Length: 126
Image 1 (cartoon, rainbow, N blue to C red):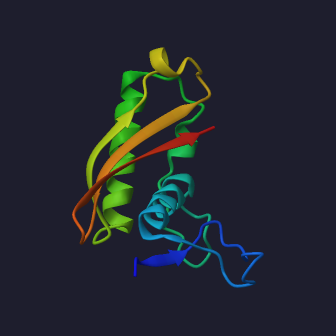
Image 2 (tube, helix red, strand yellow; image 1 turned 90 degrees about the horizontal axis):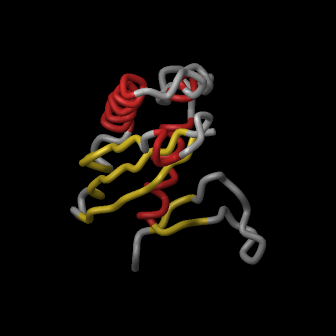
């Protein structure tokens, strides 16, 4: 049987009236989104949790900001999801491609551990 875990955001499945589940690879993508979209201090029980990229959303979109975002994402994923994923590449979509200064698009390539399965996900920050 394939591994499953709780869905994020947490919800009750209408059919089973139990906690909704998702397949493990999807659950890991959901965990990546949680890490990247949570600001440090937002969780009272774990105030260091998160990435802090939302604070850079309104900074002028530049190569320097993109490099900073890339470093923040790598550090956060390596800290909070070590043993779950091995981050391969983080790409911040440049302004020329996104066309929107108020939009930050992240492409994350990673290996799902321990299965060693390569995966990708895209996270959009508004």
